[in-house]
Image (spheres, each protein chain N blue to C red):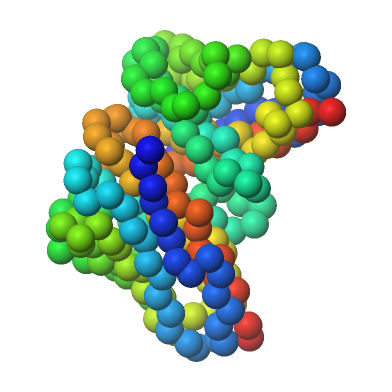
Length: 113
Length: 112
């Protein structure tokens, strides 16, 4: 079974730009969650999508948004990039419930200059 | 604000040593606790999902226990090997859905 894939793997943007990251879950998984990892804050939950609906949201500003398509692929968008948005963005997919294992992708490394 | 604490932050051991780490989490509204191993330049790898008080899970030389009443979980590695070198993360799930709150991790380095 193919794992979780994320594209692109690396991205360099400048302040004020916007960026879209993509995540393809494991086949059959309907839940996709997004996390931000920074050296100072560790891994932090951004949001979760299940069956094309946002089911949970973390404590991030509205500049961070996402969506999920009918094939469970998900995208996250960050508008008006700030230097502090430089981070590793990970997505994870799982079947459904909170006790299901979440499988992580390799991440997208975003650098904002 | 949920606090998930892991200790120690880092650990250096010799090959063959056994070691353990602690994850502390809020004891109320427990739903599930996840353990992950994260090696540099790789994706976090799921080790265990624990849901019941008193749960004990094992995968090879790695095992974990769970105490939901007092809010802690232990991860044990028996006979550490250099390939066990990684950051070990625990994550707490409050309820339905997949919103994980992660601890800061324990970085393990095993010297040959």
